[in-house]
Length: 330
Length: 246
Image (cartoon, rainbow over all chains, first blue to last red; front, side):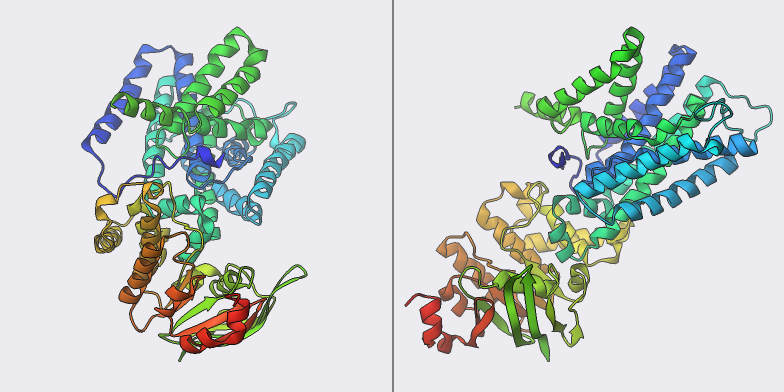
């Protein structure tokens, strides 16, 4: 798996080519005009894709750049979602300017606490502990009545956030734009982190921690900070998910959700800028269309997709395309 | 002042004794070579000095500071630099990226997540001048894995020296090189390392060692067999017997 984490995105110390900015503007422009040609449910699906992109990009920090295979990333996603859900359920609080800061606080606190436990060990044991912590939160949220709406598992009928603007009413389209803004900001922030001295150090640690220690890097601290930062973005994605989905479920904490960003990152290309986004695009839309045809077969298709990528496109689709272009150019 | 003072250093792996009750001093600025047959405990000794391993017993002082339990990264910050027996440069990363990692390791800004442009540019400038100095600036965008083996070794050892350490720990710097390349590496160490820098050098090839070392320590079966100037080591009967098989 570590091999999948190619060093492709780690580039030279240089200012960005103008072409990169053009590409970004075109892509964002495309995403901005798209909802005008779509039905309401399609806008919600597009928002779902952008939310899972944020979730996958946050996982890319720890798995792609940091080389840490976590099976409990959904714990942070669930914390974000349940912050929204519980504030609504128990306090009827939907004001965004209260919910959003609390999401940040709980995501960071949850990230700090859970990562501290998980980083007592490394490697295979890290994988097992992260898995255990995610399942623990899943089990708690399933069994404790306080975490659930009356008579069901999960929290239902979560409304869009109250922005405190008089006369403002959400539509699917305006919420899509709301998500789009956070998606662009997250993309810029995460890539900034990846290219910062911290991000480079993280890649070095992935490639060889003993050498990095000898060079003066506090390996434990780098890993810990990477996990906490990634928890923040995952929690933020969870918050947006709760609004867009209007339901949160215990399963949001569980391995079922942890494995989605992992799959997206590996599918698209670990440690690449747009790999997680490509992965999210494929998984979210494949899920939608396959489920229309045959709902119960979706996990099977997902599994086949995963195996095919591991066997034939190790390093992900983005890396495979870059290689193809290089070959065509000679 | 002693750059290193080691007292009763002992290391067991489980029940296996690797180093037993080792004591020695290295005055600042000395070049000490450590030789000995395979399994004598040379690399283990370096790992203890640089903190990759914790000793079973004994203490290590670095310029009179007790560093016996100090983590490796902290030792880097107080002036230790080391190269590994197996080349440890990150082969997938480019020459420049590897250099930047070395330069950033001792900077506060290594934990910077948003890149303060000033500090970053300064480190980049240092990386550039270092690479120009090594004659590798033209190859800066090559992944290190694509460099010739000799160039990799040369880069690694140059990078060790580039951060201005007080103590250099070099584990078999000529390992896997041809005779000429080995001589070039030794010349480089002789030529580039300032007189105030202390060097500990592990090696197999005695002839190479004698051209750089002030003193030679012979490890045998986890103990110091002899530790003396080169001429006397060369004549020592016990050393000749166990090490050179004469």
